[in-house]
Image (cartoon, rainbow, N blue to C red):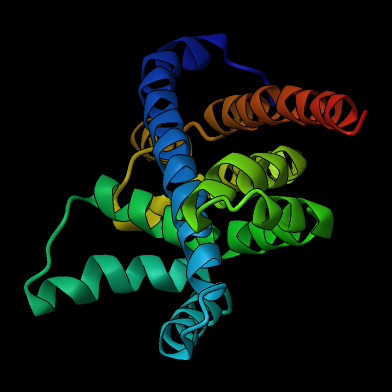
Length: 216
């Protein structure tokens, strides 16, 4: 089968539009997952079980159900209850919520890795609880878990094509639409595959370098 460079040229405007949407999903979804993951972690460390139990149930449910099912539920079921959001907003929220249950475990591991002496020193200095967390514990914990959080960013990137099922035209969605309209599948899908490699592989190398730097 002959490679058609004209098809590649025709597809590139659609590719750039899809790439912009993909990066938007990735950035906003990552910020949401990092923030929510930290919130879940701190709530699970509260002494009140009436806080821990609901948070534990919700996060376990989200983590153990497929992202695809969550996308369908948020986009098609919630409007029946009067909650309607754009496809892009729904996708960002779904991917951020889903991965927050994983980043939660990363934060938990980072906090537990902080030496007990740090807690004891904060207590000896009579630091307020909030000051202990913001100035002593979290800076050390987050520094330890940055590489692991970065791995989930790459995982989120590879899951962005799932948003196509709720009409979000990210890179793969644009390629699929172009292919159906022009009956050319090889070129646009190859471009998308190469694009994912060019984004994720350098990011993986960067994370490895960052991990080596942080563990020194």
